[in-house]
Every structure is written in structure tokens, then in C-alpha cells.
Length: 453
Image (cartoon, rainbow, N blue to C red; front, side, top):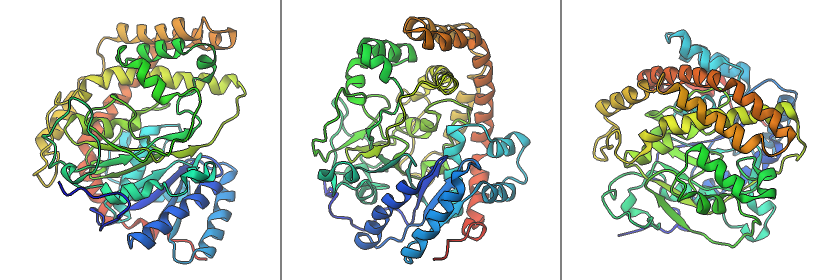
């Protein structure tokens, strides 16, 4: 095996890429921080990668972001910087989706919080920037070295440039126990790491009382009870300590350990094949393509170069907490409804030798599998949400009990709503190849030109 070490950035295995920071807040600190990764790409890999800040609403911080990005463009004349406001996005999607059904048009114009659609927007924008890969960092993160000086050299983009798109057999990484060969010719289509700092699931209150509550939460959500203690220990450490590890692990099946986070990731190829689940206020639906790709035999590469995740206020705001736990309730249904598709080989296997990687007949099988989900076992699915309320929230304290009672009263409604989302996902899967081809014919840099310094 001629494995490529990460410190040597050979010619990347993808032609070009875009660096996205989607945001619903002031992203000045994130944008300033991640310019260092783009400088690295230019100096060490000879890649000029545009930075694209994509707004998700019209909040007051949009003007702040515009001012920050204009100043960064002035100070960094060699760096292309694009600011995709909602007005510019609407112009883009109006042109792109002109001939699509209203259900497709509406999902890309909806103001509601939808993690799947947010990811799908980046997938399409990548194609319209003429790129075949994307890097994503979230706006409440920044380079770890700004908080932990010992992490100064640990840039995630170095691993992304070295390994994204390469054959598994050429990747210098550990394989999980029990997984041998058989995937050496498959391309690595997802490379990513995790967070250091704020946990990516808001369970601090429960962990402070007992990790047993967090373990039970994960069991109700649908994780294998045998795997839960180790998974919780890895994802929610009592105390985070930077240990300097620089390790890479191939992920050959989802949920067998820490998988790449969407806020610290790079993607190629599968963004053109597997759109995320467009489900309002539903956590983790943007991981659909990553998880299904692993099940189809397209591994992901996990690295230990974390980004720092900003600490949020510990204040308990009832309306925000209720919205958040509604998202977890919907996730409980999504994770269990789609879970059987994520069993390795359950839907089929990708063809590493085929130019399209996921042939048309396999895409059709995926569409049929998703199309069969709406309407299945509504009583059992509502019961899972009720268990989340009765076993986790209601016993904890009165603040959470109020939220728990609300979830239990609305469990059947949540199931009906996500069924509609799953049906829309089937529609999007069917139409995605045509939408991607149209996206490639549009030049988004003309709609949203690079800022002038």
C-alpha cells in the first residue's frame, strides 16, 4: 500500500472545491479564523478555494457579516470571498428550480429551520460554483488553535486535501475491528472530524445529574444499548482534554463510533447523488448522505483534528428549549425510520468501478425504500416520542416536565409531519440528478460575485 501521509499534501484527488460557512448569526470570528485554512490550501496545495458565507435568514447580523467580509476581502486580495444573502439565494433558486414542482420550490424558499435543506443548498451551490467538492465549517466554530495553542498545526483542511476522493487502499488510516478489505477500490467521499468545546447535543443538564439519563436517552433514540455507554463516553466526555492525537479512522458503517460532524467536514461525489432529508426542525437529517454512503460501501474518513465549538448560554429559555426537544422528538422518528437503510448492504452496494458510483438502478431502489416509509407503524412511532417525554423529560424537573407533556400531547402530530417530509424526500431523490445537472449549468459567481476589496 502506498499510503499518503497527511503532512504531505500531494495533488488533491478532486479538481476544485468551495469552502462554506452557513450562518444564522454574526460569523465574523469564524470567517476570520478559517481564512488560515484557505491560506494553507493556497500555499501548500496550490489551491485557490473560494470562501462562501451563506445566510439562512435576514437577521440584524447580516449587515455585520457584510461589513466583516468586505474588510476581509480588502485585507486579503488573493482570496475570493462571496456573501450569499437570502435575496441572492432566492434569485439563484428561482432560476435553478423554475421547472420543478411547487413542493421542491417551496422547500428551498421556506424560512423554517431545516438542517437537511440547508445542506442540500450547499450541495447545489457547489455544483453552481463549478466545483466537485465542498468544505463546511459552522459559524459557531473556529480553529481549535485559538483556544488550545498546542493544536496550532492541526488544520482539518490538510487531511481533507490529502485524502478526499482517494481510493481507500491509498489512505493511511485505521480500520475498525472486524472490518477487513473489500473496499480498497472505493473512494473516500466524506472526510471530517468533531468538535472540542460545546457538545453537539444539549444534554448538559442531564449529564450533570447522571450519565445514566444520557445513556437511556440514547437507547430511546434508537442506538444499540450495548454500544451506548462507550459512544456517550466518547461524544460527551466529563472533561475535555486536548491530547494531541493525530489519528484517522475509516468509518465503514454509521454509528459505530464518532462519525464526522457536519460542521467540520468535506464532501465529494455523494452530494450529487444523495440529497439530505428535507425535514423541518429535525436534528441530524443532514447526515443522510454520509450514513447511507457508508451502508452502500463508500467509507468515510474520521480524523481527530477538531474545531472549537462555541459555548452557548446556559440560560433556560422555555420557547427555545421546547423547539430543541421537538427537534429531538422528530429525530427519534427519523433515526428509527431510516435506520434499517443504514445497515450495510441493506439497500444494495455502490459500484466503485462505475463512473456514477451509485448506478441509476440503485438510486431507484433507494427511492423506493424511502417511499415505503410514510405511514408505517404510526402508533409505535408515537410511543417512542412519548417514552422520550415520560422517561427523560417529565421526571427531571418541572421546567423539562412542561416540555415533556407538550411532546407527549403532540407525538402523533410529529409522526404525521415527518411522514410528509419523508414523502418529499422521495420526490427530491427522484428529481435530484436533473437538478444537479441544471445547477452545473448555472454560474453562481455571476449571481453573487466575489467581493471587491
